[in-house]
Length: 119
Image (tube, helix red, strand yellow):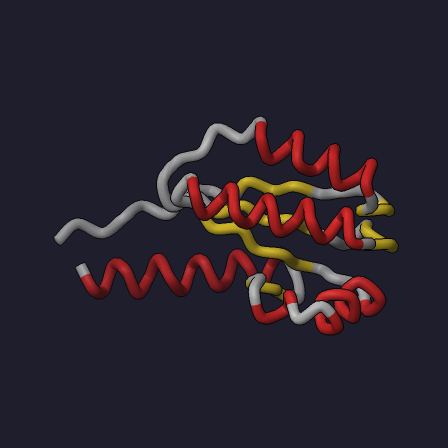
């Protein structure tokens, strides 16, 4: 059995407001990604202060796009107010959410190591 290669993550960093305008911009960025099998797409939410239903829709659409393309989408650096929106909408159970970009990288390193051991 051949171990699959874990590629470098694609990093997206939406700015301040993830509303209809910011969500549309994020969807355009996601659509522009040339996917590779098993690629990781990381949305760093550290600069997002506001998230509404349009922004949530964009994130869910992005997750769906990633999955259809054989990729994985994760979120990191959610501020308290933004995290609360995910918890209230129960989307925190749908998305993989990490505390920081560094924890995403550590998780990927662990997965790659376990894949190497399994091979």
